[in-house]
Length: 343
Image 1 (spheres, rainbow, N blue to C red):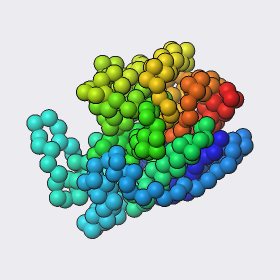
Image 2: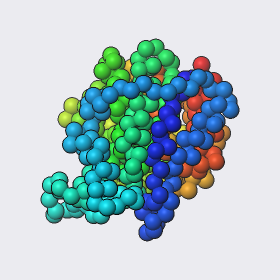
Image 3: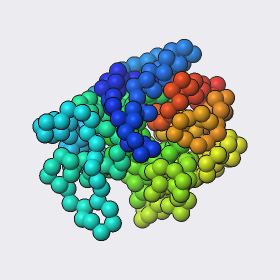
């Protein structure tokens, strides 16, 4: 299986995130992608290529232009105020306040974000652009006939919506790739999100569309970040009614229950008639992940890969979460190896 990877991900190297009521070193760090790449090489998964530059048009097909302009300028605007440490938002427009974009960078950070766990640094925009190009290059290879490609994206993307960032995500790589596959000729595309956290951004982007089906297996929003999307009754609206499927599960969920949800999601994808599948590949469902509460073991991910292969359609794997750094490579590549073994 071909892997797409860019060294530019290292430019996103924040120093602090707000978690557990404290400013702590981020769990989302460059070492995550490096460990996955080391495992890809160790098992001989296949060739590793740098991404092509696909320009801004594919980003504009998914994200709001004002939001993209904000991301491109945010660090420069922050530094102009005399600050050179990580940029984090100050407050958010909660119920009863008005959603009007402020002029100051502090206000803009708050307007375009939904958490204080996603620092913007001097290299954020370049790293996010590279991550999107990794996804787009993988999508192009799938459209050209590859059975499967692994886009080793970092920073991740599935929490980023059309016009906001958060959850370590700035550009929604999976959504950008899915839209690209549509533009390259696939009539229907499915996104299967197996990250521990709900892909709120991906759901929001496609919620009223009937050409992209979204299925997500995740920690229940009554207990788990991002809290405010991911319930079972969110099934799409307008033309997209019935094209969104959430499978929220409580803390402590083990593999057999989780795998049953994966089987059901696969059945929904088959009925939808997807011609290609984008897998938001998060392995923070692992039992020892430091910020997650599911109980999957490393060997389980081989079976996950085999199950996804059973969908029988061209597949793009897009890296999302997973924060047990020493195990992330084994777990992510086990999914890919299981897929390959299934033939």
